[in-house]
Length: 111
Image (cartoon, rainbow, N blue to C red):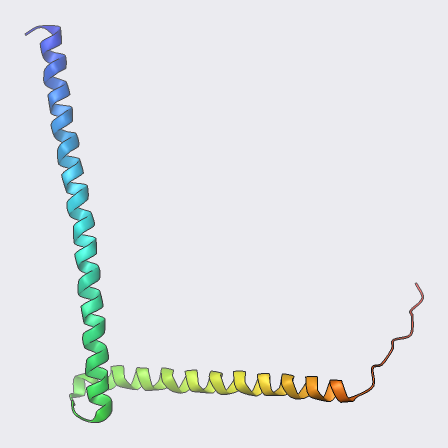
C-alpha cells in the first residue's frame, strides 16, 4: 500500500467519523427538543390536575404535600402583592400630601 493510499484511507475514516459525530449531535439535539416537549406536557398535566384538585374533583394523598407547597407559595405571593400595593398607596399619599404643602427651601450649607 502506497503513501497516497494510506492518506486516502485515513481521510475516508476521518470523513466517516465526522459524519457519525454530526449524526450523533443532531440526534442529541432532537432528544433535548423532545425532552422539552415531555416537560411541557408534564407541566400542562400538573396544571390540569391542580385545577381538578382545587375544585375538589380529584383527590389523592400523594398530592397533599405538593398541594400544601403550592398553597403556601400562593399565600406568600398574595402577602407580597399586598405589601407592594400598600407601598404604592403610601407613595401616592405622600405625593398628594407633598403637592398640598408649601415647598421648603434648604438653607445653603457652608463648606
